[in-house]
Amino acid sequence: QVQLVQSGAEVKKPGASVKVSCKASGDSFSGITWVRQAPGRGLEWMGWISADSGNTKYAQKFQGRATMTTNTLTTTVTMELRSLRSDDTAVYFCATWPPGDSDSWGQGTLVTVSS
Amino acid sequence: DIQMTQSPSSLSASVGDRVTITCRASQYISNYVAWYQQKPGKVPKLLIYGASTLQSGVPSRFSGSRSGTDFTLTISSLQPEDVATYYCQKYNSPPFTFGPGTKVAVK
Image (tube, rainbow over all chains, first blue to last red; front, side, top):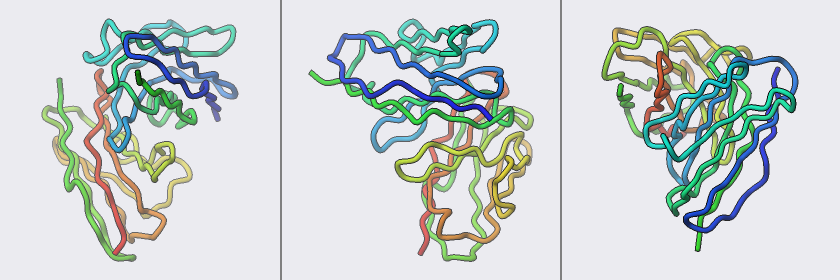
């Protein structure tokens, strides 16, 4: 089993950037996906990063504004989101990928964007 | 991009009822659909992957099937602990889009 532990809650002003980290331990895994959930809303897929190659795929909506990186030494995956807006206020989750490989999720990180 | 529609958006059923949730892909995606359960305030949990493979540890009352581009999640006998929102997700190729969700309540 893989355990994923995310960094803590963040409060940011509009236009700022945020980095959310996801530290993995336990079994190996193929990749990490990032999903967010705005208050009272559904799940939104943001992107995916390969655990070994660092290859990435982003949802069109986040292309150019989000960057996902992996540090194999520290087994930490980081998601940076820039030019924050109020509608980026959400809980951000990392999760192992693909489905069925394993099913491990981080605990979620609340990012609040407010002036 | 391939869209995932989900129906119904919400339902209420009695304990013991058979519940069916449907997800429709706008294009062919083979069996690359996963189903998740999310209880209020909790992290999503994988129930089904490959359209019909039950994730380890998930109760056998949950099952999944596919007919063409229609995917179905069935709860054979609804239990009080099944109150949650259920999401489908396509994963044949990026973007790995989620359906809008189905909120399940117990009468």
